Each structure stands twice: as structure tokens, then as C-alpha cells.
Amino acid sequence: NKMPTPYDVIGEKTLSHLVDAFYERVGNHPELAPIFPDDLTETARKQKQFLTQYLGGPSIYTEEHGHPMLRARHLPFPITERRAKAWLSCMSEAMDEVELDDSIREGLFSRLALTAKHMINSEEN
Ligand code: HEM
Image (cartoon, rainbow, N blue to C red):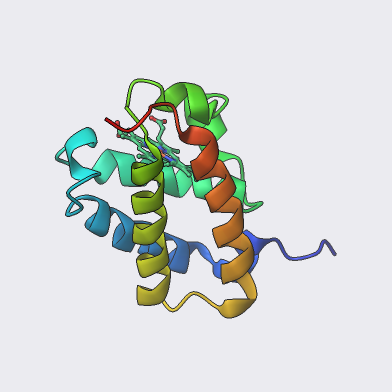
């Protein structure tokens, strides 16, 4: 009789759809595409695992890859404030596409905005 988690509310299918819609945009974004691999299949697979546990679902990212240490894992990539904003705009559009329920959208987006800000590791050039 546990409270439903955000993962329960969103559901595996919608989460998967959200991540696919997100990377579709990332792969076409002029500021983001250059720092991502050409083939985003594996990136999307890891992001589905990560967001599952971030939203309170099973810890499937950590089981396969260890502690997320997200900031450290992003250090090889120059993440500027502009790129963080671009990442969040791709996510917002993906949320529109999958019609993410308003009851979950605002809370998830504001958490992601904090995480994105934490990933910034480079000045604009
Ligand atoms: C991986 C960029 C924010 C979660 C990556 C990769 C890049 C990247 C280039 C490597 C992709 C690959 O090699 O497959 C960015 C940029 C961000 C950002 C520009 C803007 C702020 C975030 C946020 C989250 C996140 C907010 C969490 C919600 C992840 C995860 C991975 C990843 C889970 C896979 C890590 C792994 O290799 O296991 N990101 N990211 N990222 N990112 Fe981000």
C-alpha cells in the first residue's frame, strides 16, 4: 500500500515515448547534436533507465552502470548555459508531444531544470 510514485503515474510506455521524442529533438538541435553521438539508441536506453529511477521506479540505471554521478559523467562534454536551456526546451517540446499529464509535468520539469543547471561546466565561447 505504498503511495504511487511519479514513475507509476507516468508509466513505462509514456516514459519511453517521452525519451524517444526528446532525443529526436536533441539529434536535430544545432547546439546539442554536435556533442552527442550520431546514433542515440544507447543514449536513449540509458536515459530511460535513469529517469525510471529518478521518478521513483526500480533502480535499473544503477544496477547496470553504478552510481549515476551525473555531473562527473557530463564533464567530458562542454555544457554551457545555452546548451542547458536547449536541453530543457527539447524536453518541454517532448512533454508536449506525449501530452504529459499536467499533474506531473510541472514538478518533473522543475526538477529537471535544477539538474540541468547543475550540469553546466563551461563558459560560453
Ligand atoms: C549523457 C549532454 C543534461 C542525464 C549525456 C551525454 C551528453 C549529454 C553529450 C553523452 C551521451 C552518450 O555518450 O551517449 C547533456 C546536456 C545537458 C544534459 C548538454 C544539458 C544540461 C542532463 C540531465 C540529465 C541527464 C538534466 C538527467 C535528467 C544523462 C544520462 C546520460 C547522459 C543519464 C547517460 C550517462 C551514461 O553514459 O551512463 N548527456 N546532458 N543529462 N545524460 Fe545528459
